[in-house]
Length: 281
Ligand code: GLU
Image 1: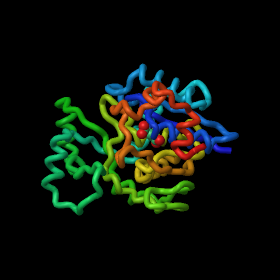
Image 2: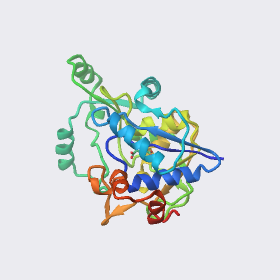
Image 3: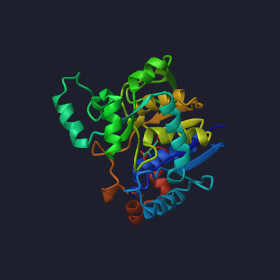
Image 4: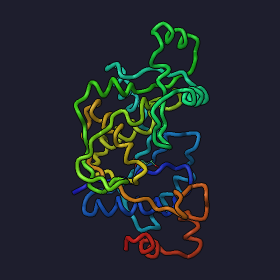
């Protein structure tokens, strides 16, 4: 019996790809528990109206989930204790860099080429002296907290996770984690008690998720999430990554109204047709 979840961010309307993800998670939970989690940490973009619309669209799809739904915006205390636990292990450092400074530094850095789309950070603030950190903090300079990925990797044994679906290159079974794949990720900011990777592992554990089903685009995210689970001694779910639903070869966007469930509904498409179209019937 699985406990699975669909974890959308309410920053736009749901589209075909979300419908596929939600159907897949609900199907994997058949006979077990299917949860919906609202990932509304990014308060500058999350909207109550989108949350209402997405729950209504899920109902229209014929899905049923347990209530109440968990909202990440209510989970600040849990995230702050996790941040404190990582800080106590001396694995976090404050980063004062702006986006622009990071981009400039990256353009200068002579580093091995990395895969497109992978956010990387050159580690500038990892090298700050304690005195400099104190001075900047005393001056009120805003900072984010980053994970020292290399230090974390040294601390941990080799990690893996179980892939029950398929990764983007057909990966299956035990997948070896590359702990430094994303470099020193941001785990918290002044306006954000936890960034995505941290919030996800805390909440998957809190909700007793046994099987995480989600798209290929998050396959590598599992590396850093697995590292955080190990550092925080959290139970490790199994993973089933699924293909992405693309439109003209491109990822669907919440900003392009053509593919949203709202517009499909308005055009008279039925949930059964949608299932067939997504080859889920
Ligand atoms: N909230 C994430 C998204 O909207 C999904 C998180 C996950 O499934 O781990 O893409």
